[in-house]
Length: 102
Image (cartoon, rainbow, N blue to C red; front, side):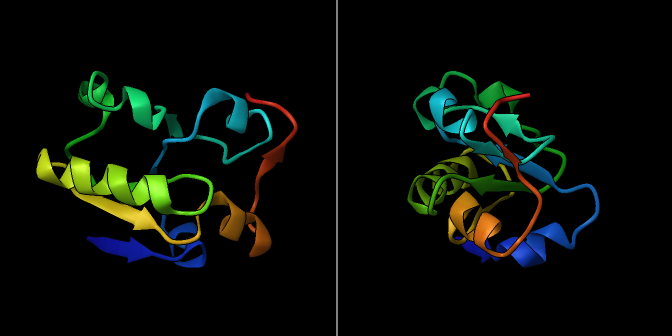
């Protein structure tokens, strides 16, 4: 499984980010423009994940996103895990929306 740091991901143009956190987590902090599919719904919602581009998978600290990226890879998606999750993204000073989902 491939991984990428939040800073490396943020530097990419038009990256597709899949956030696999739960809805209540998204209300605390989120990255604008992500595809939001909780990991527990990923199997049934696999068709919503793009297959024509690399998908960067993020969660809170990187554990669930690693599992999701492995699952996606096994199902033909070019998936990359975001190391450290949104916590590392936030700690790196990258843009997040705090306190409410869009």
